[in-house]
Image (cartoon, rainbow, N blue to C red; front, top):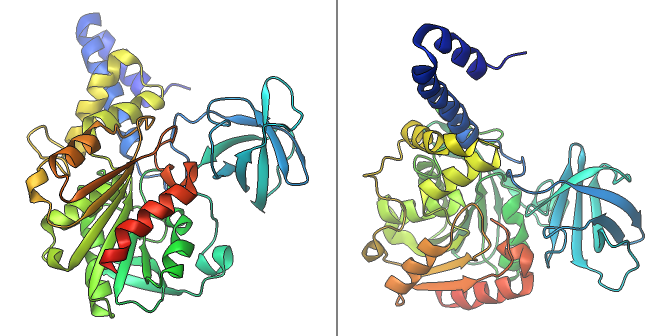
Length: 380
């Protein structure tokens, strides 16, 4: 069956001739690719990650297809339709075939890992809510947002500085649970908020994500909620487009003076590069990538004359900790390096090597949490 893009291209060929048709078809395909890049799909792994085949499982072990992804150090979720598990480090001395790798199997949280199952590594380690996944008491709360109620988890603790966590591309509010045990040990209350486009939250008016450019207002609503219910100060901890939301809130919120610090994990600071990577990962032909990126920028209101988050280092007023690395294929780390170099008085860059987008904690949990401890201690 023909796709809408193919049908439109065929009709245009008949009416306008091959040359004009090629231009129109490219524009249509570009628009289609732009919609694919920007359409929110919370919980679906980001494109580009290889599918790995489960070869076998044993007590505490899993054998997977050998690849750069399956060889990465650290702790990850493992996902497939109806399946979620948690894998730990590679077991280098375990017997295995030359084309496989054995990792520690820490838990199977949903479904079963039968041989032949095709799975994907994801930075989203936990499934459920803070109580079922981590044993942390929490309250299910609704944050009043401009489009409607935003579901959130509140994990109480003794301090009056709250950490507001916000996930990014391809994730849900389950992703920030990786840092909740650490934050709870340091007696920091956590408000983990969903935003427009998430399950249970209002849909964006145009049905598209905007890489934080409109979503930041939902984070602003979470700041208002925190201050209304007992926080004196807040720290914003965002991943990916959630990190861009945190920067935008610090730049634009009327309550920016109550923000005491920002933690940015894999921040999306270059819209053009991220949109190009998303479109390419969804197999957009290389010749159509410029059309896809331009269409996506137009749809999302990310015009060339529009400043990206962090583009003005002089606007920073609070300490910032950035977790990022050179192997991030979706959000290049060069803008983060420039931001840190421009404001060494406020910005600390913690490089994480061999880490995928949004997986800085996963690659080195102990190193991540130690850097986070040093950053947060004076802000508590």
